[in-house]
Image (cartoon, rainbow, N blue to C red):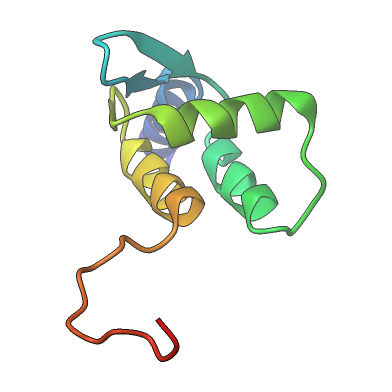
Amino acid sequence: MIRLEKRIRALEARMLADPVILYFADGTTSEICGRADYLLRLFCAACGGEDLSPRQAAELDLIRDSVSAGGASCAQMTQLIRAFLLGPAEEPSSVTPVGV
């Protein structure tokens, strides 16, 4: 039982310490750090679930402008946030809208 508790504490410590590294098209990087559920809470705030703090708004702007992320297991969450912020991709259509 003690061994399991030590492993859980080590995992929690790593989750709190691992930053998400955002990569941008110009070759620069930026980091987002927070508790293990920080990106999930950031996603919920972006969806309108709560008011955005200035820090959250700035980090959402960073995620929106980034092209990829890495450095932590939470990096995939940034892909979901970016997809939500950017909206659906425009696909070419063979149908011309009425009235055009």
